[in-house]
Image (cartoon, rainbow, N blue to C red; front, side, top):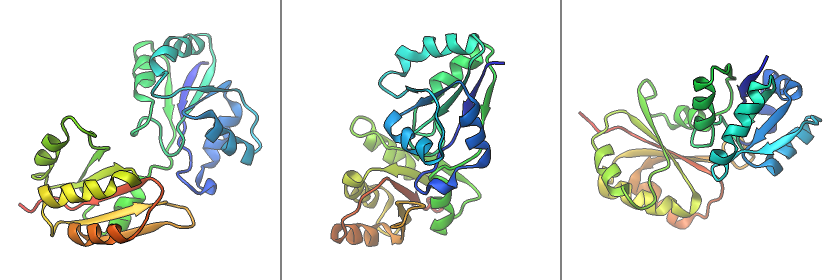
Length: 224
């Protein structure tokens, strides 16, 4: 029977993939990958030889109908992103929605997602939180920050290294210099780093430290 599998992949350490994920990747007819070169490294590591096709933010609208047709023809397909769980700040939502419209079965496997270890590592309240992902780069950014300044739940952001300082300066402006935050980078890798403190303390820290890798920022919620 046709089915779309949503398969999380490691965010750094290749050993974090689940046994079930490996089984699915070995058995499906096709793997849709955000970057086939990145996914090929993972498959090669686990000696999986499987047909790959690109499915990313720049072509997902164009390939959608073809993928749905393949699923209607009884194919089984796995969707993976470069790291973590597809559809979480990565392609996947459009395909899942279209499968639901067409009555195609979907199965999402549990697995790696960067913001969970970052949240737990932060030491900030994790009973209630809001996931913001990437802030708008330009239009709507300030409006969003003004709105989030009043959010009482812990807030989770994704950020890139070259925009981190700009973001911390804006946090200082909108959230206040004493708001507690945690910055996590290179999660599960050799050079994993989790830095905690106030917005101002971390801004000063990263003015003096060069950083690489994708970043998760955890921000304390506003006080009632």
